[in-house]
Image (cartoon, rainbow, N blue to C red):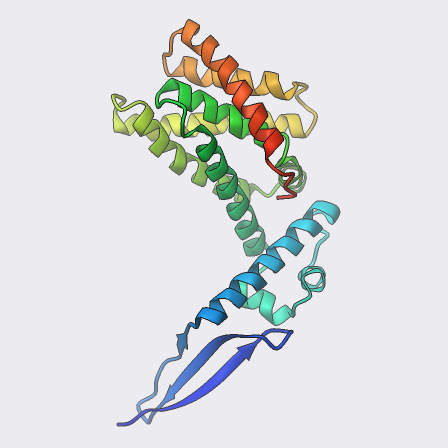
Length: 253
């Protein structure tokens, strides 16, 4: 039996088409099919980015709990329908914002250390870079997460961090049994998270250099790296981490 299609252009607040929807109809029934277009994908990405940017700005200035979805769509200059088209609720929007920011941060850190030899040197330097980044250019993100106790989001960050650390540890310590790598990755994340969180809440008074070098020293000692080698790594890791922080533009998220 032939199908008949109704074609609709879905538009955003600015009358920009971002999807073409084909609704097949027949006496047998049918599902809904979405056909993506190149122009539509670009508009879709731009709208999502605008919503995420607006949310980050408001979470930073007002706090997560005090910010409503209506606040976000006004700041993003879009519609509430668009916001819920892309994000099921405010929690999912926050999750997307943090995941995007955290992966961007980790990507930049890995790019920064890619010329550092694999092994303890790379592990230590990456720890120093990530710690310094959290306490400088990403401090506002950290402050909001800690203040509003977004434990589900923080746990998701931990999942991302552990997954990425497993691959890095595998190449830097190829002789380590594979079943140990998730535990080592979780330990590195746990110590880093605990310290930077307490610094952000002014519970632990440490300057950034002391925090970064302590975490390098603690993590490498747990991996049985000789003390003399750790001391050399601490110094070089801090130099690279501080340069990375200076060269990164200030992020709100």
